[in-house]
Image 1 (cartoon, helix red, strand yellow):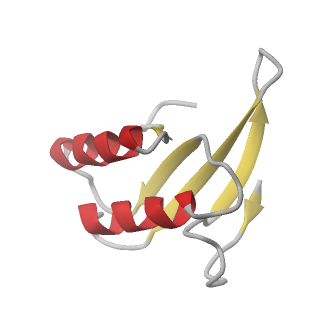
Image 2 (spheres, helix red, strand yellow):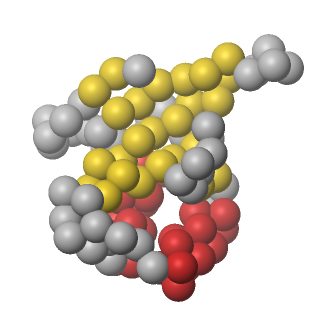
Amino acid sequence: MAWYGQAGGDHGRDIFGSQLLDDGTRCRAVIQCVNRSSLTQNKAEHDMQRMLSSPSKIDALKFVTRGAVSATRRDAIQTFAKANGIKIYQSGQA
């Protein structure tokens, strides 16, 4: 795992790493830290678009927020992510 922080050229990635899966392939994942009381759809989509423009292929994404995210918002974010080939990990998932 590598922490990018607020470097500006991070393509929306705060923490980036890869995991070796049982089948021998690698899953490249991003943990996106959102220091806001709420995660808006606009913010989520903007960050995902930035990650998609990154030269590094991203397989999975997890948003970490300081506030609660409604089920409606989670569903909308997941719909957008799936349409763009990104898997979203929800709380409790590895």
